[in-house]
Length: 344
Image 1 (cartoon, rainbow, N blue to C red):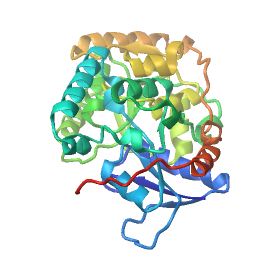
Image 2: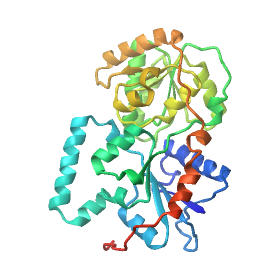
Image 3: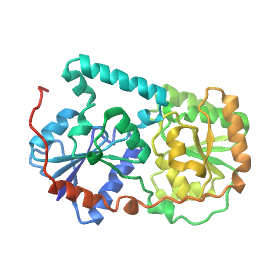
Image 4: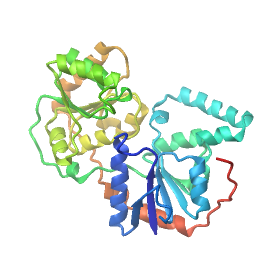
């Protein structure tokens, strides 16, 4: 069995948590004895048995892959969708259904709404993500599976450190992560905050506004992205707490890493956080009122010293230990694909 891994956005152009997911999935498959390669789009001679796509692939890519003899699976990251309230998802479902009924088929193909049904398997990071996908796109039970995120060993094996007087947030400095809003709230609350991460571009207006706060504030420290996992684990271990108040998120890898280091969590008051962490975190509402956010952060900071994390995540090897068997089982089943490609 040979698995080809693919992602539509080159990592050199846009960093993010998906990079870690792809690399760790590759490691798990290699440990299981599976032959794995990254897709070489320029190599017409590259061959494989399964195309493993990270993110929702276009219907055309799936059809091309299947017509070439591949089985196709995807690990879906539905950050925006799972963060929306139920009433918005219901409206979106009605809109999708109406467009499917009255507009030409190629419109549906553009959005890849039907791709879930032609995949050989759809992987989701949690039961919550899976339930949302089923509600929105009628994903078949036999073509859906939960494939949880894990944690790198550097965090799971990190040593105890004396807690210091700062909160930490790790993430890309972009509006959906609400890093600027967090910095403003911590500055107002006079709570020391260490932010680890970088922007997609230093010329980005949001980053410039964030950098202005960092320059003026006595409480905000900005540390550029840390690739050394042991060094990042040390920051988590020394932090009084971890905070992430993003407006859109799926199961946050950063939050899981912090939990592995037994760091108290303050997360967005949204379904993704409650369903992923339940009573193992504190919650902050998403609001444009800086004073309200500052009040929640101050309260969390003052009480974090007495909080104990009762839940401990598992490693990538543990979370995906059955992946190789699932992929091997897919190859043994009959493919129901029928060539009926529409013009590209």
